[in-house]
Amino acid sequence: LRRAACFLEVFAGQGTLSAAVSKKGVASWPGIDLTTGPRHLDLAVRRDFKKLLKLIRDGHVRYVHFATPCSSFSAALREPTPISTNSS
Image (cartoon, rainbow, N blue to C red; front, side, top):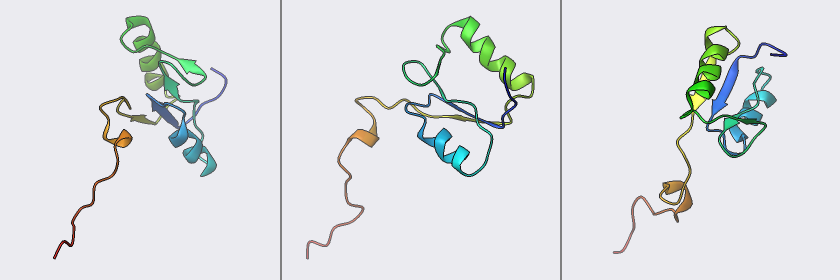
């Protein structure tokens, strides 16, 4: 481990939240994601899960954000629907 950091984004995708937190001056680890980003961890694999827990338990991380997966069923991929309509 090169440096202590406060923030870690898990299931980070492109790491947008990590970048935004870093821009605000908060020390951040590169985001963790199964398929993208500089740190590839599969939390379904016990060894990888233990690595994540070790980072947290050893005090290298104070805040962790777990994002929900963005996939074909995600609302983020659908067209927005209006909250209300004025059809009168």
